[in-house]
Image (cartoon, rainbow, N blue to C red; front, top):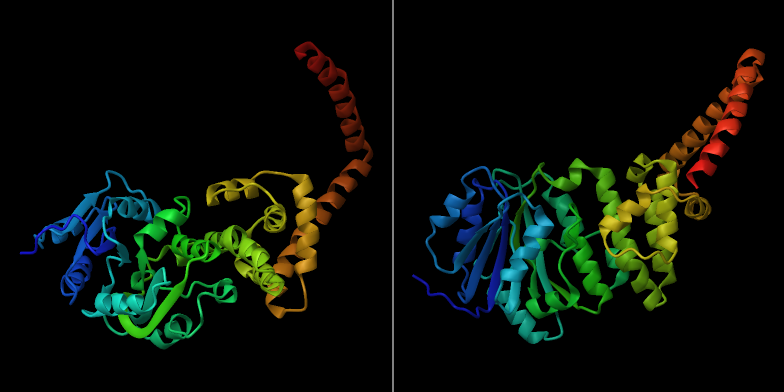
Length: 375
């Protein structure tokens, strides 16, 4: 049986929530690594199945299981794992994924040859919930297994091409750039990677399929497309925009704004929210996290809405992908005009109009003295 090392080279971070059927294979793939200097931090997010029992059955002292008393969500569970980890490198692996035996050794060898790299990933193989090759594996691979340089800003606009389960990251780097945004649900890893880019970290992806990922319908991103779109917009505001400004990459900033304008999922927002969103993307508004960003979008601010409406109009071009957004905008305007015309017709009716006039006089008579009495 392996002994405990208080300063392991690697800290595997495994987050689990009701993954009883999968987590055993995940941990087995870690224990079978050709490089054995590691610990395994398993954070169970208050599972209701037997996930913890599966973990405990391994009886390896390098496995450290921590159970959340209540369900905290992925970002908070991840932050807890990072704070508990003791290794020089943090290795991410979701509780339904698995890795090749040589993955850790290959990544460390590449890092030795490239000492300036802070975050390293690999190419990925895609499987379904039953562990069979996914029918859309080639399509997923076209997105993830590319030769795009992740050190370039344009590689991150509107897309996260780095699979978290494939990554290894310096613990010192992680502590320097900060933990996950706990308010994010669908794309905290995307935010973390782009924050790392903004703060000068270097990326490298090994073009070998050393990571195997299950693509399942339970993913939170697909369950709330509007929420996912808002998180993408926040990531652009938080990290991509300031990085573009820092390196004077104005075409990249224009491309980012265009992707937001083209995002049909954002058509699900109310018109005023959409205008406040565009104002936030271009103005210097003090927003420190996704929660503050959401509250800003939900809070009426006529001045910001006027500015955002103009910016939104400027962002609309001839791209056909914007048609749905434009149609939603025109529909909102049409409803406003219809409501305005309706109340104008009501006011023109003599009997109802007289009642409205009487109501106005009553309000003027009693509201003003009431205000004075409260002063």
